[in-house]
Length: 344
Image (cartoon, rainbow, N blue to C red):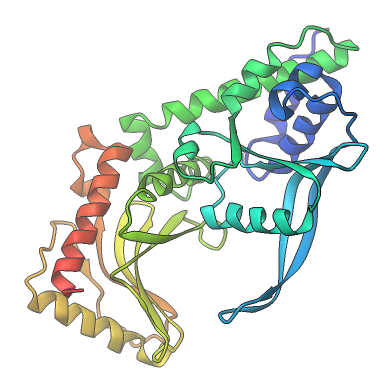
């Protein structure tokens, strides 16, 4: 009886980057076509790929001291130990520029007198415009093309596994593209806590983050995907700042369908005082309030963060125009309106 069960679909796509790293290592070890396409044509014999390889190093700067831990998804050394391939595998999100810069700095200092090739495997080739040029970008679409080049399988089990993986990736990429379409994208933002929607919204937010990186006015980005039930992006700009004396910072936050002027603070007693002062400034500056716009209502709770003002992008961006390009433009307009009103 033919086996019609795809093992990779059983494992699911969410929280399984290690599964993909392990299978990519299997492909590199067992199929020359994959090794050539991913590692480059190299005659040297390689050791067995290592997964989730941990390192730590000392930080000694005026801003921060201590030890920093990093972990490479895949590390492959040749037998002579004079060449190493470092693979960062991002299946459900993207690394930050800082993360890759930190990796590059560590690699330069740790792997001395050794040829290094750094590879980022990503769902999107638009990463090429953002990330350091010394990282080779390989998309999962290219991996599918590579798998299709395989001519010989040692046994039938290998072929079944490889075919299943190829089918799984094709379905994944197809669904990723479908979720960029107008109505599907609105569904992700309408129900962001749905488990399947959360997975795709993380990827959408990662792509949106890359688009925003091209603007100098936004200098720091952080995507918080783990602590919140709804995926969010925290956007720090050059007109928002940390107040070290009173321990608070301003930022723009996109969480699901809500775009917020937001405040983090480490002194809960002053939280509402800080927020109410900003509300007064916005109101006195005749800040343009959209139809869905809301100021934070007075609270006596000692919270670590709260929004100052928020808007619902699902209500503000026309249904027929709801795509990443218009979301990007809306965030830029939100930024300019806040900057003008706060006179910063």
